[in-house]
Amino acid sequence: MTSIPPPGSRSVPSRARKSSSGASESFGAALKSGVESVSSPDPIHSSTSKKNPQIRIAKSTYSNLLATRILKAFLYSFIGIVVIYFCLAITIARILPSSSIGITPVKNITYAGGNIPLGKVVVVDMEKSHDSSTLDYFQQSITISPTMALVEVQAGPIGNFKWSGGVVTSNEKILDMTMPKDPGVDYLINQYLVSCVSGACTPGNGYLISADQVVGQPLF
Image (cartoon, rainbow, N blue to C red; front, side):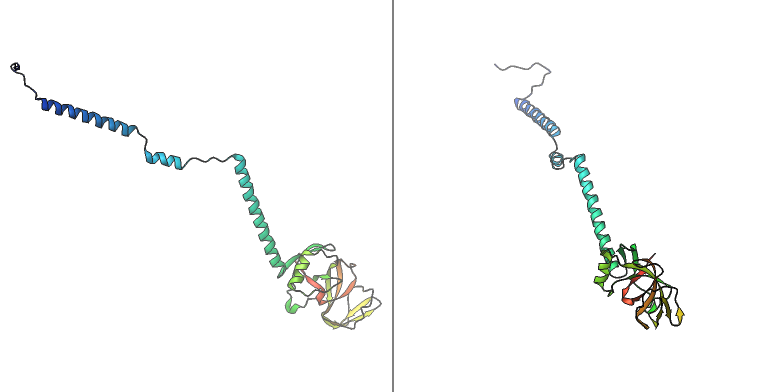
């Protein structure tokens, strides 16, 4: 028997009911997928955080690194200063570590013509000559010499010379010095008569030195 719907009601075909049920299932599946996509972590940010972890350095390690850098900076500075000093020492000026006159900074003779004017104080080696070469300047700057002296030039580098009982005369002028021994010369040729100021000599006494014995001019 076929059922007859009551008056005023509409019958829903079975195909329509199936379509409505399918739409509901599709909407539920889409909603579930969206929730899962929102709750799942972002793969890009996740991988970035793994690739860039925070690095922490212990205080002792940091202190060691800082001390090493400071030591290297000091070492490089020291080497640079030493190189600059020796470049100056073999060309212009140097420090004489003498045991007779102490640590004395000197520079090369820069007087006109290379002749030392009368009355100037210079540093001389009382026992040996110097060739003013690069090697000689270098040796002066590192060798402690006991034979250096500060002297005042009284005559030279050329002129007449006369010695008589300790009294010295040059170019007919009596010099203010005492020379105990006769040097045995009558004429100065590239030589100086000097009076001792201090160092490896007797203060006030006169000495005859060659121009090659002059080491330099004191800077102070």
